[in-house]
Image (cartoon, helix red, strand yellow):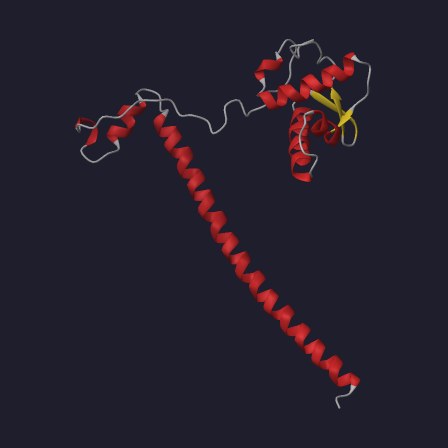
Amino acid sequence: MPSVVGLLEQHELAARRRVDGLREEADRIQAELATAEQEWLEWTIARERVGAVLSAPGGSSADAVAAGRPGGAGAEVEVQASPPVAAKAQSQVPVWREGLARTALSADYQRILAALAARVRLGQGPLTCQEMAFAFGMDVVPAKVEALRSKAKRLVARGWLAEPAPGRFTLARGVSGSDGGS
């Protein structure tokens, strides 16, 4: 019959082997992650360079594309000239300034401002992201709440909202009215 100390040593050895195996797996995953991040960075740079070439001044994007193809600009290739399209229209949040309309923001940001403007009109206090998610009819789950929090923080950073207490948002001073201007 094995001793208690012997059994403990066996369990300790099994745990040590598991830890070593997990460390090796973590190192492999870390190396794979570094490779994937590098590939992502290269594709991002490539997309930016293509965008720069297509929007180069002094010529249409069709000329730039045709010039870069075998046979040069004289090659008979039909290329549709079109301006580069952003991944998300109006995903940028402009810095708030006097008279800037709420319509300068995308629909999601406008929705947040409208909800907070309604709270101000009713004389109610700041709103949490959980309360916003509930008010918008969203599932109040961490992913949805964090997405709203990210948008609200971006609006705070750009001067549209204020955060008087951590996690509680209201319209910034000067931002009011139906269009977001003063």
